[in-house]
Amino acid sequence: MQALRKHIHPGWLIIAPLLVLVMALYLGPILNILWLSVTDPEPGFGNYAKLGENDVLVRIIWTTVRICLITTLFSVTLGYSIAYAMVHCYQRQKNYMLTLLLVSFWISILVRTFSWLMLLGRRGLVNVALEDIGLIAEPIAFMRNELGVLIGMIHYMIPYAVLPLLVSMEALDKRVMEASRNLGASGAQTFWRIYLPLTMPGLVAATLLVFILSLGFYVTPAVLGGGKVLMVAEYISVQLLVTLQWGTAAMLAALMLFGVLAMLWIMSRFMKLSTVFGGSAR
Amino acid sequence: MRPGLFSVFNRIGAWVLLLFLVTPALIAIPVSLTPKRFLSMPSGEYSLRHFEKLFTSPEWLSSFFQSAVIAVSTSALATILGTLCAIGLWRVSSRYSELVRAFLLLPLIIPQIISAMAFYRLWIPLGLLDSYAGLILAHTILAAPMVLITVSASLATFDPKLEQASKNLGASNATTLRRVILPSIKPGVFAGALFAFILSWDEIVVTLFISKFSVYTLPRRMWNGIRENTDPTVAAAAVVLIAITLIAFVVFAILSRRNAKTRAS
Image (cartoon, rainbow over all chains, first blue to last red; front, side):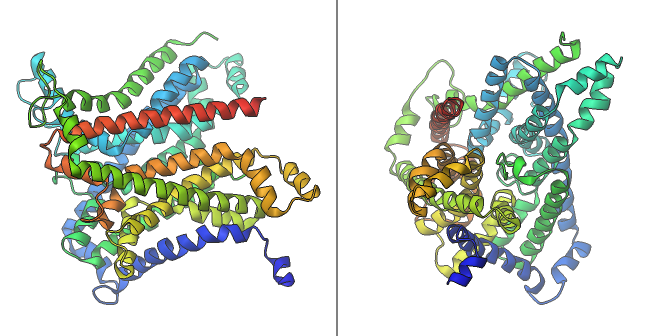
């Protein structure tokens, strides 16, 4: 016991309960799914070979990647603008902005999706309002297409983009920008050549974070896509709950998992991952 | 330095965007007040009948109750496990412990659909499908990393010398934990508990997979309502959820303000 104590820090004793729980009930079945992707229905890479044969699968993956890329592009650009404004205004105004941001962050995804359903439908508030002021004669199809999915997803992802950007902008030394202006650079030059490169780690973190979170998004595409926009997450759920094909679903999950882990690895090259999650690992 | 034209435009744009983030959710309020039996905007007349239905229908009430039980249990379990684990990692603080920390944060970042699949896969042989225990365990695993993050953040500002002092004065490990460490990281623990509660209260993707009939949480019932897209009771439920979110937010703001004050003094 004494010898054991010398090598193993007693702190591990209180780490163990959570660690064991996560290993047994989370890591275990995830490894099992990876295993299934090469063994169900028969051993081999048959599930992965489907990617070459099955046009539907390829189309679903392409739809997912495309929607995630567009979502990421818009969320991060708009998020950058919000974070920039927040860092460059008075404390009081900043607090109000932060409150709005966090409230939107906290409102249930279901509530928000429901609201978009009410707003964007054929007889939704947006179409009715646009018709009333005579801008359009026919209702615009905001829903049951990619546009609706994009609106809902960008709306959900913007706060996730703002938070890492905010952290990275607040850590900047303002004197660098002043030095640049004093040396005769214009405001635009200072922004493009000094400010933007210095906030690059935050930008990379925000981009990857939003992209990762978008990849597995289920609720918004399922509701606002109205069955017309099939993304990987919804396809997996159909495979599992309706057609009971674990193999294909496991293959898609494995691809998604490896994609996410690869992006996390890239992210860890740019910054300490723990800071992205708002914690500090000392 | 005077803000340039660009800055001013950007600030206006940022305000518009922030309002765009919050206001769409408010549409649930008028829709919930419609006197009609189907989802519609009220025109002139208002009625509270859908709230009445929400608070008298046994289905909705049982969903509220089930969600509350599951969220409270999840929050308690995740807070205990997460706090202990955070303290342990903080005490060990080695290369391995940082690896373990990174590993334990994975449930937060791995797409929910994959987590749902994993729990579904394991819950079938364990017989945990469609049970309180199954949902609480699954939610706890998803929520514990949140607690880990908030408690670790609190620990980062805790002075390790205090722990040393306590031990030098003859306190045991357990006493030090209870009387010295825990009181100083209380804000982080409470924040973690609140986050864990909200995560479970709101969780839908995993819940869709591992619950069916006997456990029917609030998000699950809302999901059904949204998919059927006819009954305005969903709008009333959405309004109640927004109200709860705002209350939780105010509680959190007060807590963190108090925290900032104690830290400053």
